[in-house]
Length: 214
Image (cartoon, rainbow, N blue to C red):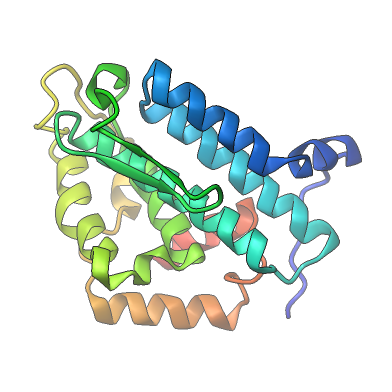
């Protein structure tokens, strides 16, 4: 495994990120079911989960099953951010495998909590998390095709299915956005990620590298 430069993070922050991630997510799930769930809340969940996984790699670089489950849950949340903000009036389901629960539009109106539009950066972050977690390879849910054929065009076109919000992306992020990903491209990306061990040692720098690969 190649040496990767890490950011200097205090032991206190690492301990906080490691502490009871399952309990924190379950409490958040209860709040979101009753108070409403939108892109901001799901993004906060994804960041919290990803910070937990990154903290685990400080002390044990090889991800165990629990860490991979947390990473998968972070990707599900990031994908939910895209789905809810691109199509606020559509049927929604966000799976939380770490706690065996889900958030669904059957339990409440997601659209009422949508207070910001997605940008190309939102799409890139979700794509990177889906790739590094393996969610993009879930062909039963056609995640890769949804990213390419549904979410990317919606962001590029200014989220036309949202009457109240308009997406505005920076030129650099628009240039980086992968809106022509096909299965062969995804295989190549996975091969490149495997070669540099990004799948086994994710951190913020790794996600930036994955976005560059895209």
